[in-house]
Length: 124
Image (cartoon, rainbow, N blue to C red):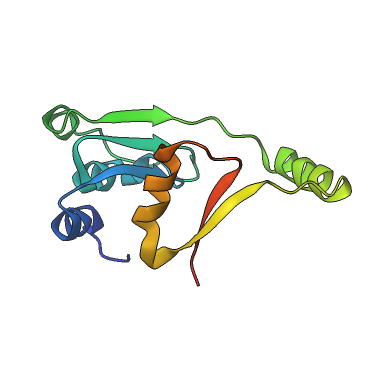
């Protein structure tokens, strides 16, 4: 979404989302909070843009939202991981694949128990 006020647009379309995964940085926090449903969470894992304004405490408290920092490794660590996975021919176990248009079934399956492996939501 390229709208300047994308958080409000997301909220208007969805009634608020439960989670925003922020891979940009603090400059989008106000938009992320606007997009959240009450009790939602912003998971911040990127600090590529640290030029954000002050945090809107009213938005944070008004929605009873959470902001959670997620630690990730460096680019070098990611390359090492990819090399290890490729070298050792490691593949995740997939329990089932579900089409994107039937994505709610993936969440139902995930909570039903008896899974062995990942549930993949296919985009095409």
